[in-house]
Image 1 (spheres, rainbow, N blue to C red):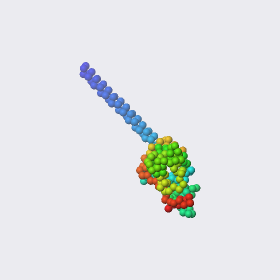
Image 2: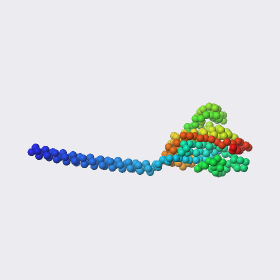
Image 3: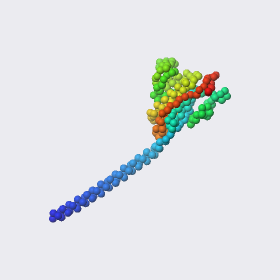
Image 4: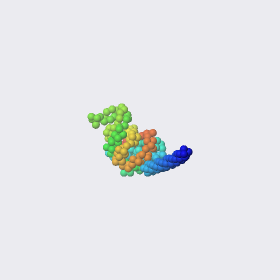
Length: 254
């Protein structure tokens, strides 16, 4: 009798153990398959929104300040780890016969300076002012001073170091009559530094400002996909202006 009970218990234990193993195996298979499906879905969603980041990023723009006498050529090149800004006066000529063509500045920029821009962007001084302020101002030396807070027509703080904001930059540029190479290079430096500050701490608000005022038509996904490459453009900053001499209100290139 005891032997029968013992055998029954043994059979029951074996059956229960086998059932438990099968049940656990089924649960494990379901959980594994579900986790795998979620991973695949996540990957699919990720790939549908974000493409592979490019190795190199390159962009060239010619910026015209419509109510100030300046152009600024901006080049971003991640393969050279370089951001370059080249400023020049609108009143420049190559020789006594050929003048810079303001009706076709992209072609003239190529012919005069061998600089190829993909797009011409027109902004006024108010946009330039807000752009520098968007960067939080630029910390630079002030060889030409800044505008006085109480007297905007007066310049102060010559040959000191401070943070230059958009209003002061526009005020200095607005006073220009015959700027030399050194002075225009100074403005190129400020724009180069401001560009670095904006693109290194980029937000949707910054993107909206650029699209609304510079007509760049860039989506935030476009920026996200190129973010590392864009940041890599600012390891080296180059800013310059052409050599020349003013004669009869025209800047003759040398």
